[in-house]
Picture 1 (cartoon, one colour):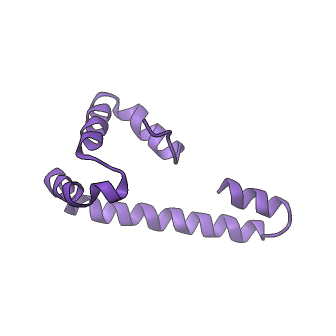
Picture 2 (cartoon, rainbow, N blue to C red):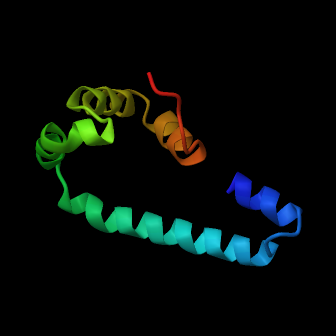
Length: 90
């Protein structure tokens, strides 16, 4: 979205269209996660990552660390996860 805002400020993109497209994309992304999440449990994620995790750059160790962080700091984790789209890789 920062790039879209910059492009709209330069007049190359309609600001209203960018806002509407961003809102629709964000809503569709969130709804799809809310639909899929109840169908997927931790065991399914672990099996998938054992097979395909190296291609995605995600390991079961990283998932376990994220789970512990979430369990310890629920409110902060949700706030930062919603606010910051990208964190530096550790």
